[in-house]
Amino acid sequence: MGVALTIVVFILASTAHCAVGKKHDNSIGSVMYTENPLMYQAVELSSAPGFISNVDGNLNLRVKPLGTYMLYDESVLFCGMPLDKLRNLRGDRFVLTYERVAHHTVQGLGCHNLVRADSIVQSSDEEKLQ
Image (cartoon, rainbow, N blue to C red; front, side, top):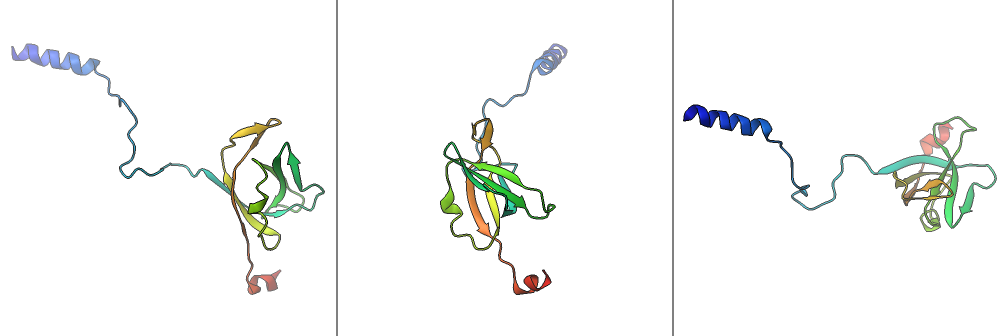
């Protein structure tokens, strides 16, 4: 009897598959993720013509990322016209914070939600070095 019971247990254990029936929320009910959903880019506005443009009601911003060579620039398409987040910037250098994932496309390009834009303020010691 004991041998038969042992064989039945081994057969059941070998055919069993472990799986979680549903995704469990965290214990405190807050949003948690394993990757940062935001992109941070330190930039200055490009001096090229049309550095700010409207693409079907969305803001296309042409910027020069800090630390790149002088002629390099890139365009970032933001959903809607979030000009209110860019109005209070001081100086020509600032940090753009926007969602990494594009939420929809405009003319085949992904547009991102601009979260915030912050001025980069240099101290007087740094200004003397430049």
